[in-house]
Image 1 (cartoon, helix red, strand yellow):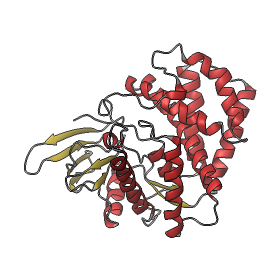
Image 2 (cartoon, rainbow, N blue to C red):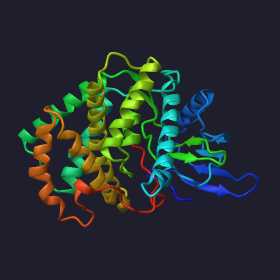
Image 3 (spheres, rainbow, N blue to C red):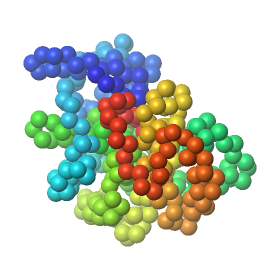
Image 4 (cartoon, rainbow, N blue to C red):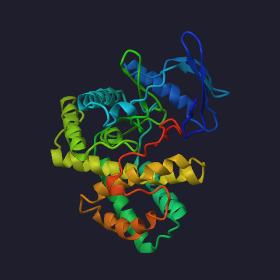
Amino acid sequence: MAGDAGFRRYFRILGQPSIIAVDSPPDKEKNQAYISVALAFQRHGIRTPKIFAVDFANGFFLLEDFGLRLLQPELSGENPPAEVAARYSQAEQTLMDIQRVDPQPDVFPAYDRRDLQTEMDLFGEWFVGQLLGISLDAAEQQMLQQLYQDLLGSAADQPQVVVHKDFHSRNLMLLEDSSLGVIDFQDAVVGPVTYDLVSLLKDCYLHLPDDQVVQRALAYKQYLEASNLLSNATDQEFLCSFDKMGLQRHIKVLGIFARLYLRDGKAGYLNDLPLVIRYTLEAAQRYSQTQAFYHWFIERIEPLLSDHPWYREWRTATEAGRDPNADGAESL
């Protein structure tokens, strides 16, 4: 089967029913975490593949086959708006179930400032330095660190819940009974309450119009308040936290997609960069603390982008239009 951006390989074993055999090298993948998170999610009624057999020593699993139906095509603008809205609501309900999971520290490590900082550092190293060939001077490095400190503070100020950490349309699957299955959850952590929501509504592979993003985000805020997972936040404060969390994530993703191409030879992710740039700059443009980064990007980075064959005008980027199974999806 088509793999993902990690070192795992997948094989479908035909039978009644078919099952998935996974070769997941134990020195490169989080196999114990995969099993622990799967069991924790299943105890809370979240559909993850049933585990039939595990060989930790060799990194082999036998798992339930969830089929081939990713959520991504169901969210396309080519589908009736009511059906798209219903699928987003279904995904949001699954996310709410995840956020209610008991945040056991032996299963879900803390997603702390060091982790968030390390992720954002990938932007300067891989996207700016390696992909675009730019050497940052001291003033530029200071500007980025000031931005990062603001984003880290925003993340730390949010309620902390269980976070899937890559909750988007390629890691959600529609099952035969029309329920939603969750995959690629081995990196789950305890982190900011808006992280998975922004991963879904500002999907790196699929664009949702901004007015719908705001509408859905604020509706989800009401769910959080009703579930006692959020309190004392105005709509504007919540949207600011949501946008800044997305800015952290998308700055990181720019670095990761560049690394996937340069280090791992996965060129398909370059086609997804324009949409990620759009998310990054739209969020950075909105807030006084992030506008210096926006103006720097427009003046220093944007003029160089047109030299690259993967680049499309970021202001109108929606999706890459490539086969979503071509490279799988990176754990972001």
